[in-house]
Length: 310
Image 1 (tube, one colour):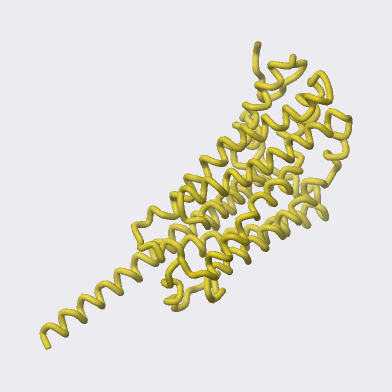
Image 2 (image 1 turned 90 degrees about the vertical axis):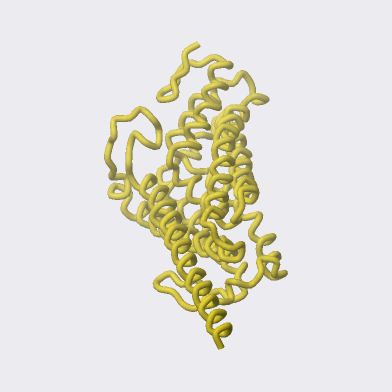
């Protein structure tokens, strides 16, 4: 039983199910504009491995529910509606708006919402304990956002969805099986995204800072990633709807791996948001807080020596 993840065709039941699961794993690994930026944002915002794992699971399990539903609709012959021209670009707009909302909710975890995107200010209030009741309330409010994002983003119709809806779902023997390829595809993605979420959450705690400084860095990183990423998604969606030919421009790599075979707008969104905004902010803010805390420690030591000499 040969498995072809690039262009599967004429599959029996067993091969179709295995292909669906493996495609989901590949989808979770490769840079995808509907998964990585969102998982990164919420996972880092949780500033712990456990919270990152939870964010990754919430997002990907909700995504799995959507893909199972989409797969069932495809078996019923409705795949052509999900593949309507311009649907992917239209989807960027609500995804971007959801990211903006998520960024606003993430910012509410700080007593004073004043995340500065260009420059810095005195942020002594960030050193308040993370157990602040208003912060806890904001964390509970934002916890459902990855699940909403997962369900909405799942309606994107790229190469992976095309295979699931037009090849794997129709290979199922009955409507009772129609949802299974989508569910297995989502499960494969979930396995990777949950692990990625835990890794991103862990990244937020590796700066060797105090717990409150870690919280500050994580919240700034998550807020910037969601807000700037949300704006980029919304603009890209409008651009794609108005100028579809220009939006579809890209570079063919020759790789027979979906999401890597063609580097275009989706790739730029995925990599640009995670690396260009997220990882860059995480690194720069961690360094800045190290310098700030080092300066405070040096000042305190100098003051202590001065008082002793006096």
